[in-house]
Length: 108
Image 1 (cartoon, rainbow, N blue to C red):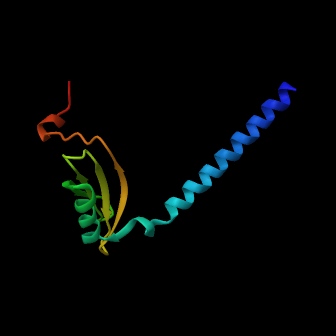
Image 2: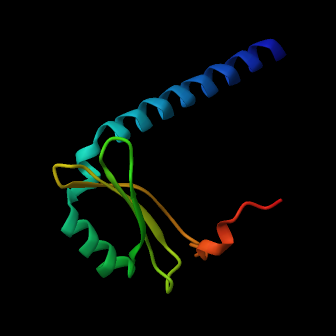
Image 3: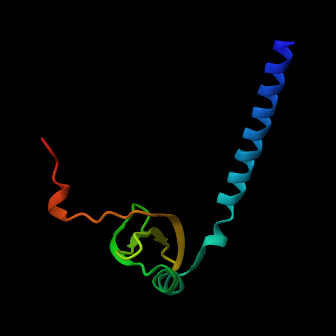
């Protein structure tokens, strides 16, 4: 009886895991659902989250990677803009903690 119970639990866990992995794969494959023109993304972040750009850089593929953050709300968003002008939301979160560049020195 115990062996059957463990087998059922394992099967249910495997089924849930498979469903979750399939769901997240589908969400990530729908890149158009989180992309828009750069100006629209910037305006939306400013209007809805009071976020403004706090840093940016270029990646190895010529894309602009920007970090937007709000001092007032503590929210942050990472946006990647492609050479064709399309911008996509990559990540977002809370509790943004700004740092001074001098704070980024390696510690000995």
